[in-house]
Length: 134
Length: 134
Length: 134
Picture (cartoon, each protein chain N blue to C red):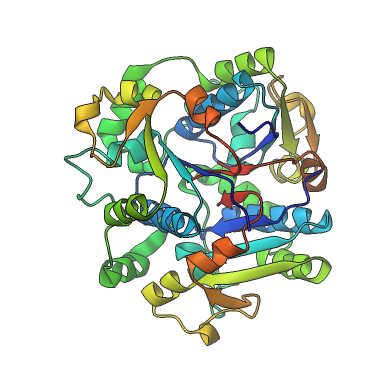
């Protein structure tokens, strides 16, 4: 079993990918692994305080049948799964400062799940193990 | 050279990404690495026995010229490349139990390439090295 | 801090993902890590000499507001960020020979940023650490 930090670069902002990312985060945290999340682009946009619970769509490949399955399934919102992962384990969520600048965002615009913002070099200082891009 | 297990979380279900995933799996298996595949969402949907050989489309960015190149190229189907990778190396393919539930799938609905289903914590118990999300 | 090679499989060819990939490459190179890039499918297509500076679009999830933010932001082109990363660190960019064949490309068709072409087994011979798929 691997005990290194799981570094997740979250780029995509659709609900299906964010749900997959939250489940991987929760699974790794439950196994005692540190998880280091870096929010870029559309994932950062989805973590805006005013939008986090809105509908962020799913991947275009879903099709009507897939979308219906996702909606029927319900289950916990990905933001809630990230919250629980932070409660049970060592999970840090950082906003990419370049993406903050691109979207003209301030720290107050983000959901409190986001701990801080940092540049990509700071992100790599904490990398110790897999770097997974979602 | 790295000898750790390559853990692939397959999320996307389009033929271009599944082909890329199968080629990486075959390459890693040929180098003697264990490969541990976890099927979520649209990738799991693409491994249904009755759909695995159907057309699953390509990424929207392909455009007509890119799609034509993929179709003209032909080559082996990604399911066949996974099959050969399982023949030559140590490749396990697991269905994510949460995604099984979401799509209302039973083990019998899946292609025999899929070995079993498991939860995300079991998946992480076998993680030893990179965690690659496709 | 991890000192292993960062292996990036670039599959996607939209400007937002290529920009994210170039920033991760530059960040890793700045930390003294080797970066090993493998271009497949739409990412390879985007590195054609005659297309590298053209508009490659963004992910469909961007929406009009997101697209406007990206365009307004400007900043350096991802090809320039890759170029600088190659100047400051040890960054190799390989074209996947299967994708070259699929698109009917020759070495001369590619931007000089691309060092050579290789198969997936050769790619895995240099893998030592994370394998990140973008």
